[in-house]
Length: 247
Image 1 (cartoon, rainbow, N blue to C red):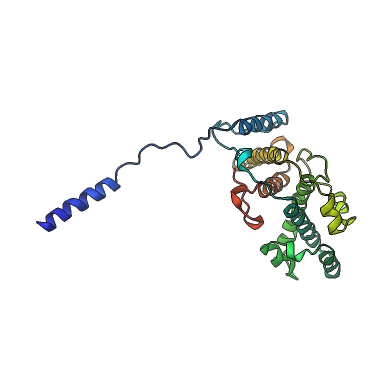
Image 2 (image 1 turned 180 degrees about the horizontal axis):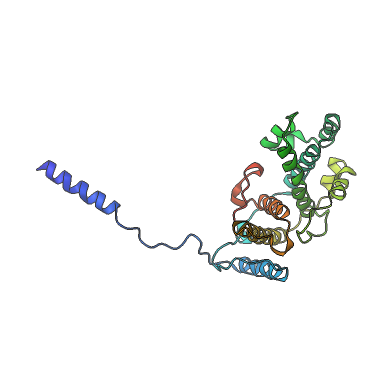
C-alpha cells in the first residue's frame, strides 16, 4: 500500500513539472522612463539623418534610466585614459626604454587591467595583439571627450586624430592632467552611450546580413566607442577586460 501511494505521488510530481510553461512577459519588453524614451528618440533621429537603420522593437534596446546609472568617477576615467595611452603606444612598437619612461611619468603599471599587464609584459606580442592595442586609441579618444579635453565626438566614419590626442597627454604631467580634467555630466555620457549602442547595433546587423557599414560608419570605431561608453556607464557592473557590447 505504501509503495502504491509513493508511485502515485511521484507520478503527480513529474506530471506537474512537465506542464507547459505559462506565458510570461517577454524579456525584451521595457516600459521606458521618460529620459530613456527621449534619449532613444534623439539617437534615432541622428541615425536617420545619416542613413543608419534603427531598431524597430519599441520595447527593447534601452540603456538603464539616468537615476539608476552611476558613471565612473573622474579619477577612474583619468587612470583608464593613461592606461589606454600606454597600450596604444606599445601597440605601435615603441622601444622598451621609451615605454618605461612613460610608465614612470604616469605610473601606468598600477592602472593597467590584468589583460593589459600581460600585454605590457610580453616582449613578443603577436601582430594581431599589436593591432588590437592600437585600436584602443579610439577608446582613449572617448575618454578625452568625457574628461572635457575634446569638445565633441564627431560622426564615426573615420578614425580619431591620434597625434592630437596623444599631444594632450604628453604636454602634461599626471597631476596636471588630473587637475585639468572635468568629467562630463551623467546625461551627456548617457546620451553618447545610447547613440553608440544604436550605431553599433546597425553595424552588427549589417555584418549579419553581409552588408556594407550603414551610413559610411567605420565599424571598428563604432565598436570601440560602444565598448568604452559601456565601461563609463558601468554597464552590467563589468570591469574593463570583461565589457560586452550587447546589441
